[in-house]
Image (tube, rainbow, N blue to C red):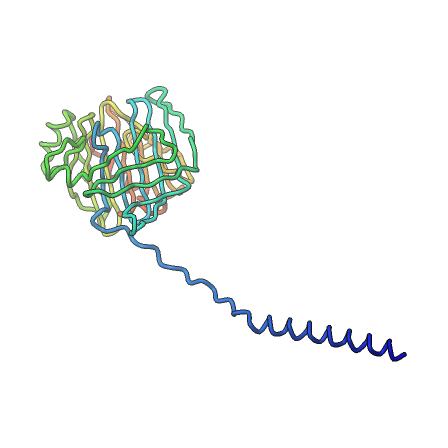
Length: 298
């Protein structure tokens, strides 16, 4: 009996010591503090804007605070569109991206094109050197780094640029060799900012409102999405007949962000975006505003 009592006492002591140790361990655990989410570092404002590929000028790049889009024409019949959500790494002075998307468009005829998504898992970075963006893509589909130079910087140093901008309509007509009568009427709030012409045969008129951009383009050679340079995905694509023209429309079903049409052996595009290219639909123009814009334009 005494032996059993001793065993029980020893067992109790062991259990008590274990409980105390467990309690002490719990007390020593530091309370978990949720990690604070740091604010993303903004892209330096002086880098925002339009760029073009330095060598051949066949690619254009738009950089906003959180996005880069690139349009790359390999020929008059094929074009690639890249869409990257970016983050700015201040320590490395570069823009990084993951989940990048590439969309390819093949123009099979004047009226038919095929759009396919090549991938949606792209990654890489844009190193920033002397105001230039050096594209290092992990898929390495361009055979090595690609250099983009700011359109404004190129104009300052006289570098070749596929686009030239001017406030003189006649200069744009002469430079593009395209007859162009810009819209007589534009939606309320928009004012003309400049004309542009591309060495590949495109002329455009640029307008801005307080928070949106409106670009009207004309070409004798290019048409459709290739002319507009807009390869965004819209929730609705439909057709309307305006002034005897069949117009392809893109947007949210009511508000129009992109309109494409042809007439008199020429091709046109009308594109509406916000100034930071953050929204791809829902900030467009109405069918009545488009109709007034198209009237009288050649």
